[in-house]
Image 1: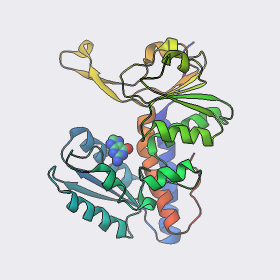
Image 2: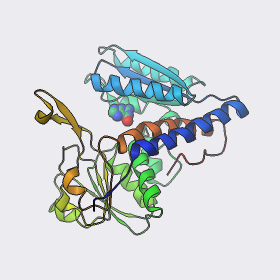
Image 3: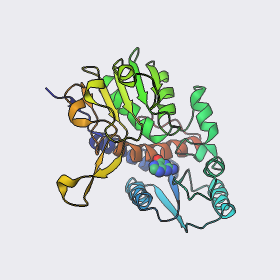
Image 4: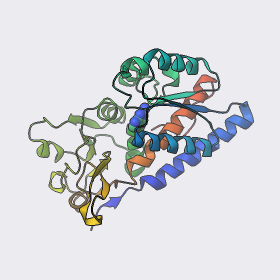
Length: 300
Ligand code: GUN
């Protein structure tokens, strides 16, 4: 029998419903409409698709959506001035600067100029530090969505061995912090880890976030383990016709699905949860800024 397929698309819809409920209560009871500002520099096609989806889902959840689309040759001072303006705008509770930025812009400087309490990506060093110290933080959306799915499926993660393949600031490192906070035992492995398949075989939970198409194979997976595939890789698909492409994860789904106990598909797994968690973080940021209680069901 194959693995249970964890339906991220359906789960994301339930998160968005919770978000919409919180938003309508905040508007009706407190006169606060949570607002998310997205800043896009340049014309990267993938980024344009992300930003369009974010804007659409933000508006659908009842929040205010602000978009700043800037030309690719925007200079750093102009971009910093926009971030400062959004920091000072009381209608904006969350700010996201779409990455990657054009090479002439210093991403670290720009991200660290966002007010930490409005940093709904959780990329600001203050939020990275707060998460590490076990303090209230803004949590990066992809690991947050991954942890929500793990807790929904398993309930308690106490004592489970988790192996994260990938050490990025955006996924691998914060994922380890979140799993640690959930009383699991995380290991961060990466492309240079010795005997990587053997390390992954120890895991009750595998989180693949290495950015290499179908790298994690079925025979790396302990039978019955839960596999969270964070990868989104566009690869040629000659079987679909000449010049066609498809999206695959960092896990070789066909072989892993035969061994795992549960697995997230790509597409339709972690991806939809990322935007849902961005909306959730915006509501959380709005509630905190107004001194309201933490909205329920929006954090892991
Ligand atoms: N580019 C691709 N995904 C993301 C994301 O989650 N946040 C930001 N800021 N940029 C991205």
